[in-house]
Length: 196
Image: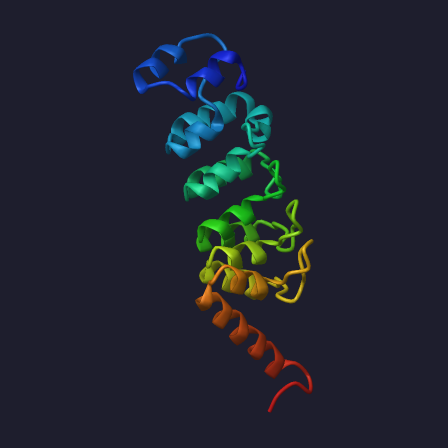
């Protein structure tokens, strides 16, 4: 079981002790650990044995293995998890989806993959932030461009009433502020009656 006492202890131990703990019953590496360490062959075996439990397993922050795969840029693991039914819109304890993680970490290729697989571009976390808000806060212009190209709104406020450009200004992300201004100007000039 992933949350057994031995597994919780293993997160605090040295690699040598981890090897010892690995032989304890009920303390197999979690799908999250396998993904983060790039152990895709082991992940495949785990998924073949019990895909339902593996793709729905949560860590202490309620993140899924897909969150970990996006974070570690592990595309093969993303593919395997999706093939075995992983919820691409799964939210963690703060409401962050894998797309929010991609936005926070600047993982544009992973964001595109998620969008190609039907992730909700306007998913909201516990603070009402969409992935576009998250990209703006963390200065991830590349991901923000991908999100906007795929239909993300830049004018939508979060729970605090702040739009992505306001959050970018608040966090001194000047390049992202310029990018958003440029994107908004481009939208205005292509809107009916909105340009030259």
